Length: 488
Image (tube, rainbow, N blue to C red; front, side, top):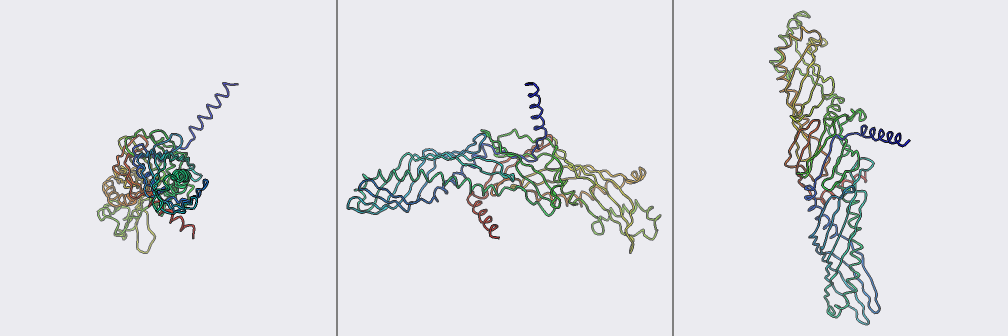
């Protein structure tokens, strides 16, 4: 029975592996990228700790009574801060042997003496260990789901001012002990709030399911929890376009799994053929790939060539229509398909081309129906955090849907039609694709110094990161947007 059970378990595991949905988009943050994030994270933590609201503190020891209030942090010196990956969990932010300077007001009663004044204090040997767990929420969004924190202040010093400052120097132990206890109690709640609330607001700026234009949207939902190793953080997204009018009409992902092997740059973006194919399918279903070339849009030399080619057909229909206007209807008959190889990327397109004659005050008349097969080269580039594609028509052929003899007669049209497509149709496509689509990065973070590599079935873009906005600015801006949305 045991071997049979092992066979069943093996088959189940094999089925699970083969049916798992591969990502259309994958992002890797490396240790180099994390090093850049460290400085921004340290600045953010310093701001959070500097803005901590400290409660008043009261205590009594024999004849000695004290009240500490109006506690203000005046300086933070997080000199030994580090941010690194914590495998299978998330990120770990550590601070060692740092210091915090603060002031507070004292109110002291000792026997019959009463004194008030300001105390300048410093916390030394400040150690903070904060780990944040990164997961996928129910909507497929990247979230911080848990924060573990351990903070300790090993030493506290205080300097008294006021009329009896020197007298109470010997009582500093009571106050510094109380103050150290208070700091230990306040640091972790402040950092927990920063992670679970504020940083999650930053992650909310990453697109999950959003509108690209008036026709299609894109789904960047995470397929699984982030994969964290000692040297990288990998995020696997669905990376699928969809028609806004029919969001459930999509194609299945049979593309190869995009693999990122590099660690040299700060960030890597991998896109499979499915990422692009789903976009072409969505636009095809949205009926974007249709065009009527007539009147002023029809190049004069092409019109003359069409009129010459179909002169006999027009004469047979009605000689009086020899000067009637002509039009060319172009319609993609199936969703274009992408092919990515080490030599580059290309897009294959099949379309119908119908030549129509427009007699005055009469319905249009079809002169010919042709099939066009074209191949376009596609070059991928990044602009900030928008992915853009530039296409160029390389191969083109047409043949008649009616007879082989007519296909031979269409040979003279090959060159002019290719030129027309290159000058009239392809620029329209590039005008749409050059606007680009946002990749799943938080607001205020852009790609720079990109390098595109083509592999069999996918592309990999390696880049460095550049902050256009600070974490605080993005969080506060997104907080205002969230507050406004809840009002209405």
